Length: 255
Image (cartoon, rainbow, N blue to C red):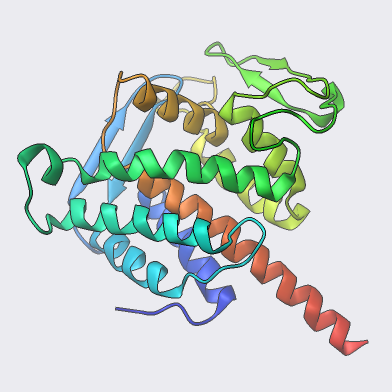
């Protein structure tokens, strides 16, 4: 198992894992889980053995990087990965409902972990979801519609924000522009229509995460890969933030 030893390499390895998950590049290994759904929130998800190796190495490499990734956040993240690993490799048996649904338990931990990381990264709302400052239309927060249109959204100080995609968009605004560009470029590829001849793009990543969370929380649909996507996205932000900070530190020492 290849370990995580270099932030730059770890970031690139995370990008590769995400691309493999969304079937954006070929993998020499045979997939052992594949999911596909058409529609505005459609996707083709493929889980490879390399994702198992990635999760094992990731959990060993994770260390607290406050404020977004403090000790509690890292422990929850490791729990998510361990539940996924047990579910994917069919680990210690339990009751049938438990042993067959470890990825579902991972998702229960993953969505709130993502939401709390977003809050700490941008510091735009408090632990109760109450906004600490206005969110003007100029911030660019939108609600995406199934017909491909966007509806601008604004909030006033003291209002409660509950929509996950809005929270993730505010988090995105707080990231380094270079990391934002990386996420945006990946998202642009993911939004390409799945059906030839269809011009309307697919829904953006943050809207999909909102959709997947709502489906799971409200008991409508769950497949088992959702927590893996969240873990990989968290890793992209985790390593991406450190990678850029190291670049800043290097420039400072050269002056």
